[in-house]
Image (cartoon, rainbow over all chains, first blue to last red; front, side, top):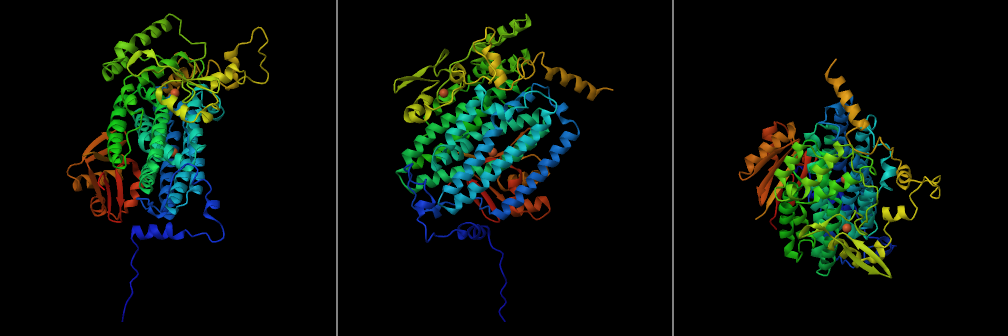
Length: 515
Length: 89
Ligand SMILES: [Fe+2]
Ligand SMILES: [Fe+2]
């Protein structure tokens, strides 16, 4: 007698059955009507079945492993909060990293959720649709877990309370916000190259790995837990980005120049956003895992280098701004922190000058630049502060129309000269921080002339509350803008020295370590 | 030739996974960082289910890697028995 033993299906067969096999050919609707956004970007796809998720993750397995990640994460968060874990961080300066993260990055997670939900709906292949659906769910999980875990800090520290309100208004938060708004308003293929590839594959390691490792190093188990939990989804996101790029390049040679332009644009957009991370790593972590420069060398130069060497077979070149970004690694964090120190009254987190010991660390990590260009500046400010003249810049900076960062970056080959670029368009002049940002504008001026530039908006009178009266003799524009930001003056802003955060942390820590 | 790498959260499960990787990939090197471990290898790296099971002392599904993964680089090829990263085509 024949005995038929049902063989367990292999991974590849299971993946095929649970993704592509569930797809169908439409019979009473035209494909173009179902997927209306697939052609206007100029990308040509001939065979969607060529896209495959190499992880071969199916929806049922996805739920199972995501549930396990959530259980682990919330167990750690509960334990951390229950034992007042926030008092175990190196010192309360560290907590300012979380304020920057919650106001600047968490809202992007939510936008990523929306972006992948939209693109997942629009792509005509079952493989990328399922992968985008998973990523969309991951991203909303990231937003939620970050809000949950940082809500505990909000019980004790200032500057967290109006994070969502501030994301849409505060000057430097328009940098990450406009980056993502730019991505979600492009076509589905550009979005995949922008976020799936350029951001997730080329740059995300620079955001998450040193940040989370830094959280672990500074005793913040809460941020470490949400960070690593989010990052466990990241390998899948990176893989989706890489597979998508290979798929586009293999489908039609006409796709190559389009993809190259997107790579040039989105590498530069993403790199500019990472300016905030560079200063976080070098200046805001009381204990530092590695310098921005070292992280750049490992995650951009080595890994990115390997990646672009691999993509060369399609005719893809490293992004246009690559060489300049590699030159800037010696300067980026120092210039950025100096600007935030200047504008320490206008941001809902604290700033400070590095201690003597921290400056020595910076000298050792940046032997060619820190002592020569930046130490004198920080020492001067520290001295002034000691004499009671802590410097706060009361004027507003000029912003780059593309990246929206204040124009503080220097010329690629002259760190003593601010870099200015400009373009004329329809009778107006537009200003840029770099060749990279100017090129992006020049290619799509109609998009970027719509930028909501915070400084322009303040000068146009669009950033005051309804009860502000600019005609009154004691009208103070800065204070009115801060009110509109819902920033509590003297509590959320100004130097770390003398802040309620510092005072409270020291008092609570003393209670925690003595009777 | 470029390196591939993979990074895991540092915990009891990944201790066994890392031990298995080092046993199966003699060229791999370990970089121990706060909260995480990163393993680099020239050109290619393979994780074998059987070796992980041997070290762990229990059944192991390679998709469980997702729970503790932090980041990786290279092209992926995954079956029920092996998970490979490489820059080969
Ligand atoms: Fe995310
Ligand atoms: Fe710019």
